[in-house]
Image (cartoon, rainbow, N blue to C red; front, side, top):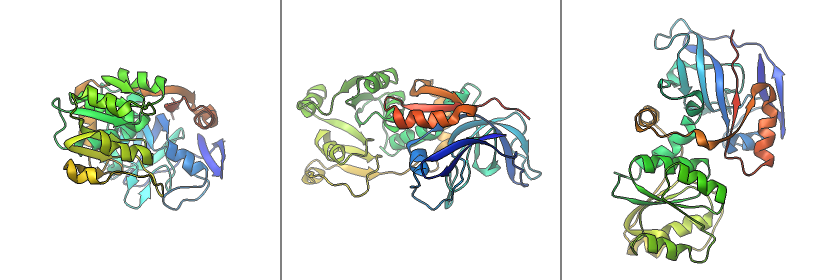
Length: 326
């Protein structure tokens, strides 16, 4: 079978590997769609938050078809459409455990969730990044149509927040300097898009909120300056959720606003425990995430998918496709 392997620092190749065997509690899966994430690029560069070893097959954003199941698996059968979680205890699927960027791969049944019939393979492979944005809206406490939301950053996670917040009925303002990503945010439900580099940005937010500021702010850029700005655009007793990750960066911030505005701040990592809820939301809400995918490559050309992510900053989400069958 064909598989994308990261074989060393900044080196990848599509190689021929044996079709893996499965244990009693495992499932053999045929990959259908796999998304490329910034974390994959970190992995390729030899950098990741937990130990791993080359060679490794990446791929933690995926949708696949069940080929066969182990003798102890009763919850799934051949032909089932599934997605799977990537943080398993201390291990990370697609990082410390080889992932889904192969024609066939193995996962434990306990990691899997059925993909609703009304969601496409493409939408299925977007569940993992979307679940992070959806989880952020869950952590914003009772987010609904009464809220005015500001989302700082329209990368894949920020755009997921836009879709989730709009799907809950909130009014959504997006801070994003890229015009193309701003238009994508509008496609996913944003009401207004503002350029955060504009000197009048904060005043514009104030104008659009009747001087009250946002009732919910999501920081999704991971930039220290935006983390500080979140305090400025928040209204009285606003809920702030920090999603973007920065380690070691610093910037001046008016921390007194936390007290004077009685702000509620939360930081989140990943999407623990909300995958079933995320799938129900996508299935019932009609939110279509497929516009996030800006390029697709067949698995046989998966190394070009990695090159596209590395060289073309206009890409939002690149997908690798496969229709292999045993």
